Length: 632
Image (cartoon, rainbow, N blue to C red; front, top):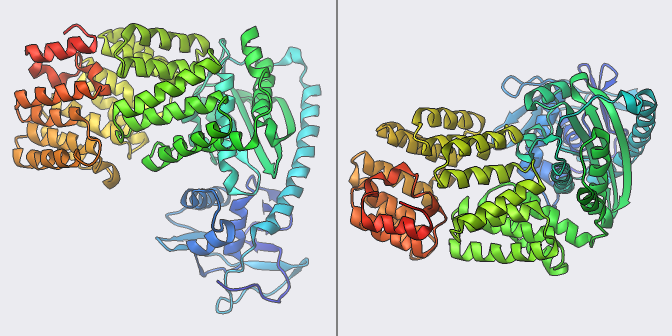
């Protein structure tokens, strides 16, 4: 990487109709400021200082994200490039400005006119140019200036809007979406804070009983997107949108938030809050309460106490908790394991901080159910202990009741207890999509298919773009034996998220039930390499091979999993399914017995899963179903 030269420092760059002002941190087109700032502009400056030369990803990392920076570098850089292309109206396939050099870096293609101290200077010579890096410390002062100006404008604008629209002229809002808050800290390491605050606002506003609040998984697709608010409102079927930003400098925290009546793109309310980071949790509740009052939602005295009663929290606790949420939401093995570490850090500092106990429980449950990396006995017992702590600290936390309902259903096989917990979660938070989703699972397991599909559709209304909720719509149709509709739903979900291994696995199962074994194998072979090697996906492939009559391949996978089970956790249920596909009923039942003794979370669905139809008349199978708490 080249070092800075002694030539005059260039702070303005022109290219086409665009101009970058690095002093103000502004990108303008024909004099009009574009809505992009922070790190995307830092990336752009690095590229503009070396036009038509390759700037490697490593050079960009060293400039903007030095060693020790807490950030997913690939995601952060990709997001910066995506936002720049949106601002420049550039096409990645046929670029006019930013060219991607696969696996190496980026090149700025257009001619650049640098301007030094207001005077145009000669264009940078390609043979002499090297990537002159603007280090983040220099940007922080600029970002601080921009934020100060933006804050003043926000306050003035909010006051004007408030006077212009009296309280009697506020349109009714019946549904609400919180668009991902923007990180204006000028520091990608604070991305977890913006995501965490977004998550908290959604959770708190979901307490409103009279308003539908869209779930987090559906709104995160709009992170960094530049769609119009009316368009977003139409896609999410809402009439109210909350948007804003988060900026942190040391222990100082600033949040701006505004409420917009989306169909008319009309501002209803806006406010700026400045606090010490110790008050971050109280601040997020204060913002939620202010929005709730503006939309006219029905807040009980208990809800008001919930939103007003949070005291100061140790900054290290809130920091660790928010990082835990950030990594848990990635739903990868590495992400969930990191979330466990951060939640444990938070609890070690403050054992009385309830949300960290719920978060840790959810992480353990993900390691059991989603990733199958630890045994149910290990993960669920730990999760139960954390939920017990959480409910002792706050018995009215909907998330804790919902998670406990999942464990009572899938691990304890306590069906009445599970239904009570799930219903309690929905009483406390009727907008809690995950509780509707889990209650639909309960209804499916107990054979109440019509009710299950209705509850699943309610979850989908609250989370229309959530991959897991969409996938489980097909899952419910599969167990209702409507295979064609299940196939359509799984295909729709895979169109949304082609890497979703869960949907691909269950699409293969739906094909199997229609005797379309070739199609099932084709789907499973499309699974990404990382997911394809997990025991649950290997078992699905082995089962499909067995049904297709290719017992040699099925046996190879079976031997592989039985060997692997001696070193790590492999679900006995997965091995049982391969034997069942091969027609080895006795061995399949032997492994189902092992699954029973390890408390396999999936046994609750034996009564309705069509893959086990060949065993239904066997007394051993009926006995297992009965011991799980079901009538055969």
